[in-house]
Image (cartoon, rainbow over all chains, first blue to last red; front, side, top):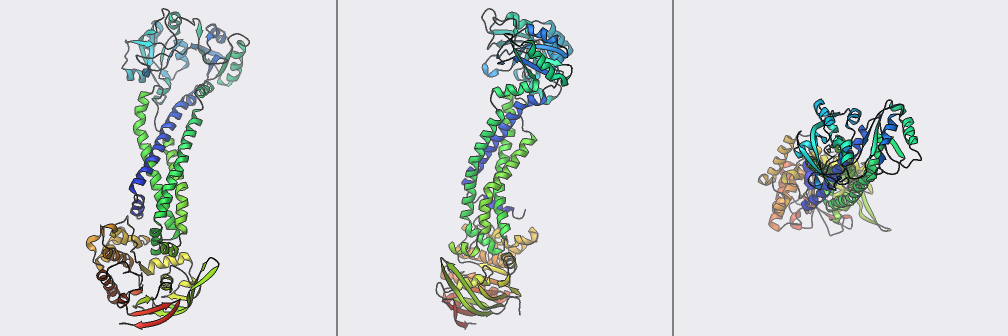
Length: 386
Length: 230
């Protein structure tokens, strides 16, 4: 601690250069924290996917619809507990930026399959008895100010009404939450009845997007997966059945390998940062050769000088990293509020620890070469040269 | 043998420049008594600064025996010399060599950071040293805010603060006007006479040498003349 004023003063020797270098590092760590948050949010669904749930889609694409009749055939398989058909509606509320996922589904079996979704019994009863009824996640209801009894207009993106209009209307009869508040972002959606959807839409009647299948015994997953796909093999509507976890993973991969994309961006940013910060540290030490020689003259050992330069590098990187992480902590709640499905976007302890580790690594990589140079400085030569 | 007596026997120092070996000091024998104020004079390239560097433990001789007090500097490793310097020598340079980012008291404190003294005790000693050089009221000033004479006084306070018995000064007035130079030399004289510091000073300036108790002339690495002045 007694060396802190010395390290601190050396750090601010060239104030503008230090500020600009710190800003670069801060932005890099801000990006790191934001992308880590997004990556974690993307993968959260994979992590908590039900082990006893399977998802059967069209064999070649998620957009390939399946006949409604498939549901009954799957229900008849031994080891299948229940099945619910579901489709992607793809509409939005008032304006496109208000988009959130909506799914027409078979409400009763669906809710039975997802015990993590908590809906009051009277509201469950209401949706089962209201053909145009819909239930919505609490986070979305809070965001848009919806309350039970409201009539919610949704503008269809894919499915027009039979009269050609895209203006669907639903009666909000329930607001659901999740047992674990941390899982709220995974269920930010609106559910409504498949029978109303199927009857009201202009085309595609008698089809569903995919089937969610609950099995009696997760150990039998592989057998049942094969049985479902075998049921429809060589038919015009072949299926591809996966565990919910695998389905979620492949769904994310449709957008690209998010982890790889983020690692590549972060890698490129930090690679550039190495040169920038490394150059700053090298310049800083080069300018201070006589001062470092004086410290050695006064009795500072080679190791002490090495430690001082490394401490300066650590201070630069850690302070800037903390600023970046702090900024991310301030920005993430705002971003999460704007992005449906990302309300769980937050700074995890692992991200903070990772950032600190990365900052230390950066400091060592950029600080070590000038620190070694300072350590090896010959006093007589350094004083004579200046 | 007293603690700070400097004794050189058959000291040789040579450097290699390219393929050539240049002998800067040749078989030098010299004794400096405790409490002496020695001025080392001679033309450029005569070996004055090299001799000063050897006495201050900044460099090691190529051969010969070099004692300062009870320490055999010629037999010490670089690490041992570093520790020895911290405890026994104060350095004053021509261009002050203060750290521009630190104020006067922080500059003076630098040698004390290597000790186990508390922050309070360090600051107490810093302010005593600044008081000795007459700069107690400039403690918070950075080197850029001080005149050349004041900066050199801060450098002297830094050299004094750890209470070394030996002060090594390399052209301490070389960058100062006559009046300021005389003030600095007067200060060194006080440190020598009243505080018992042994001082070895390299200078080109005969007037500066007049402040010393002895002068020693070097030429081409050899001792050519000694004189006692006071």
